[in-house]
Amino acid sequence: MDRAGLRRKSGGRSTQGKPSSPQLFVPKLVTVLREGYRFADFRADFIAGLTVAIVALPLAMALAIASGTTPDKGLITAVVAGFLVSALGGSRFQIGGPTGAFVVVVFNVIAVHGYDGLLIATAMAGLMLIGAGLLRAGTFIKYIPEPVVTGFTAGIAVIIAASQLREFLGLALENEPAGFIEKLGALSGALGTVSPATVAIGMAALVLILWLRAVRPALPGFLIAVVLSAFFVWLLALPAETIGTRFAGLEPSFALPAFPDVTMERIVTLFPSAFTIAFLAGVESLLSAMVADSMTGRRHRSN
Image 1 (cartoon, helix red, strand yellow):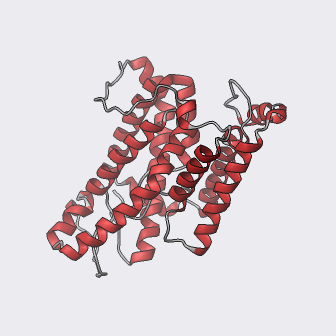
Image 2 (cartoon, rainbow, N blue to C red):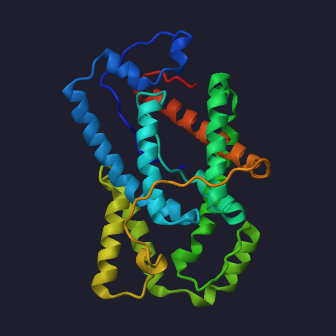
Image 3 (cartoon, rainbow, N blue to C red):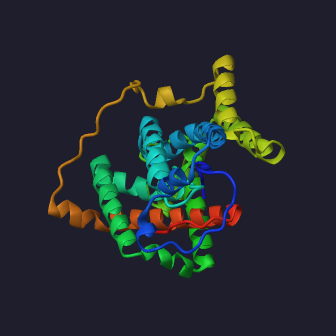
C-alpha cells in the first residue's frame, strides 16, 4: 500500500479519554489548536510537510499516469487532498495522499465512463462517506479480518505491476487491454519490441530507490531517482519516452473545475464505482489512522 506520508500535527504524548458524542465529529486540527500550538510544533510540522511534499511529487504523477490520466491532475489532486485531510481529518498524525489501491478503480472508471464519470463517482463517494460518518460506521473497522486486508493489498500490487510493464519495458503496444488476463497476453505478444534503454533506466531507478530505502531511509528516494534518471536521459540523449513526449501539448495551467452534467441514469450507472471508491477510501483511511495510533500512542476519531 502506497503512502504519501505521515503528517505530524502536535508534539508529545498525552493520555486521552473516550470522546463525548459531539467530539466524535470534531476534526483533530480543532482540538490541537484548542490545546495550544507552539512555534516548535510549527517548525516540526513544516519540516514534516516539506518531506511529504518531496515524496508526493513523483508519486502523485506516477499514480495519475497509471490511472489513465495526466500527471498535472495527479499533482492538483495531491495538493487539494493534503489540505482537506489536514483540516478535516480525525487523527493528529494523519496519513493521506494518493495510494496504489485506487489505480485499478480509477483506471476502470475512466476507461468505461470517461473523466466526467470519475468526477461524478468521486462526489458520490464523498457523500457516502459523510453518511457513513454520521452513522458511526467507522467504529466497525476493527471487525475487518486482517487476511482480507492483506490479500486485497497483495492483489492490488500485482495488478499495478502488470499495468506498468509496458512502460517499464518500453513496449510498442497500442490499445492495451484493461482486463488482467488479456493484458498479460498482449504484453507477452509485444515482448519483441522491448527497449533496452528504457529497461536500463527503469532498473537503475528501481535499484536506487530500494538502495536508498535500505541505507538512507530519511532521503526522498523517489525524487532522487526521478531527478537523476531525467538528468542522464537528457545528458546521454537516450531514446526513452518522457512525460513531455507522451503528453504532448501539456502546458502549466490552472483552471477552475467544471462539474459535468448529472442525470439519474448516470448516478445509477456509477453507483457501484462510487461505492467501491468510498469503501476503499474509508478502509484505507481508518487503517492508516490505526497505524498512526500504534506509533504515537494517540487515539483517532474514526467518524
